[in-house]
Image (cartoon, rainbow, N blue to C red; front, side):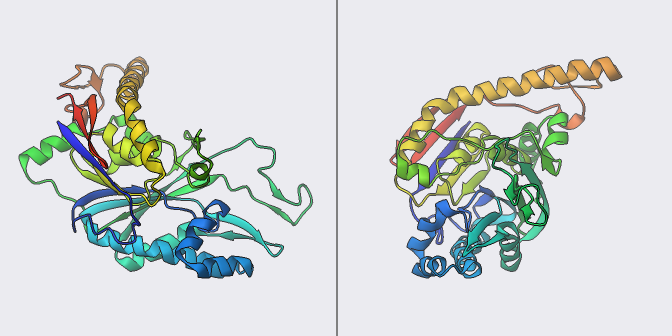
Length: 346
């Protein structure tokens, strides 16, 4: 089995290089409006944003920044297949302008725009980025009423284009079964609150790259790709950054095509391919190890399992897991300047 992984270093407000109706799943985390690290990037695309910030006009700057993102959300409607899923990881922003502290609700603004575009909203996920930093509490300390609630969570908004995807052919049904996840993974992944993930701290060598990178943890796209697509599907990320979604797609046996505005990320992304083979196979081994530990505990509590996985010959809870197969990543090769090919075990 092979997959291809292409990066287009252009603005994703016009994804002309992606064919209409060719993407099965989008997993992305855009620049967050009203987070200061993104001011320069947004202002470069619209001088009005820079003027609004200088004028301390937060609501106007917020709306203008989202107008930049709206163009990408609009083009997603074109590239996503009917029945395809879009997952947007986004955090709200807090900011003080001209002495006025306010929350800027990025998640609700994106939700509104996606609904206007035509997508249907599905139940989403909150994941907690809990921190023990002493300065996480904002405002007037222990004196009411000027203290503010901490902001330690992000939203994963989930949308679908049209109705539920169907698998009609026998080979499609078989591939779907091989793409299954474990019962206990389902219970954790499809809960509406994730508490077992932490934000990612990146050791990036270039100061300019550091200023424009805010990668989410690998497990965010890795889980979402397993949850909302099958092997061989095409995953896309219009705000690729340092390549987390690309590598998660590679680890999950999915094809990938994505956009990244910053050319400086090219070397960083392709250097990551040197490590993804071992990392993927370690993750697979860990998933199997965790499952075997689960089997041991459940057998002790509830007795023998009724079903056996056909590939690994270990117990599973449901019939849907009997053909589950975690393909190991064998190699990754660079095909051209912006494309890689991954090869997997059968």
